[in-house]
View 1: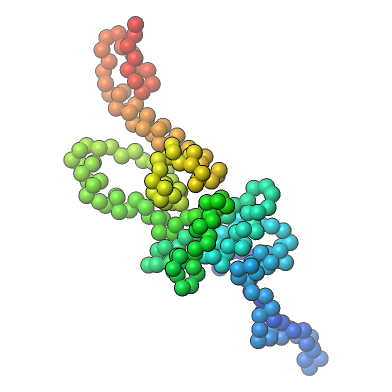
View 2 (view 1 turned 180 degrees about the vertical axis):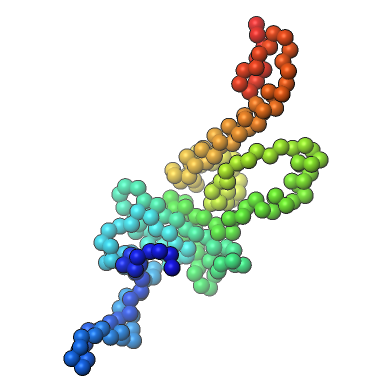
Length: 223
């Protein structure tokens, strides 16, 4: 369904027996499990099937904790990602108190282990603001201008809100991984360039007085 070769997909395995029936060799499935691909069985299954430690592991509950821990404890570059499903309307909500797919230990240790936690409920973060009365007031009544920006990654938006930090403070905060800090800095640089470009467009409409020249985004008076 996803275009992934069958030999690259593995999980829990049902017991199977090799038999001869009517002179023909057959494989017969038995009523039992040979291997359960869950919790501490996940890293075992990965090792038995591919014989190496993965570079990236993605999970959504504490059942994936051992797999994430195994993946990110090796040498070199690895990445662990937790998809935090809190949007019960579109997906099952895996949270601390869920009776199925509980996500508790993974959230507690994500920061110390450098795992990225992405909240699935934030994929349409700005939809409410775009249709809000606040936006209408800012644009139509106060003459505000919007600067079009590439969206920030959803998990960064959630983390900034959770820690109540500005981007400048977040890039030095231990709660943000070494991979996420450059993402924040890149987003901040893009924002500053957009702000300068917007101001530049306004200032270029100004007719400088005699003896003044336009330089970049500011008016520079000749001495």
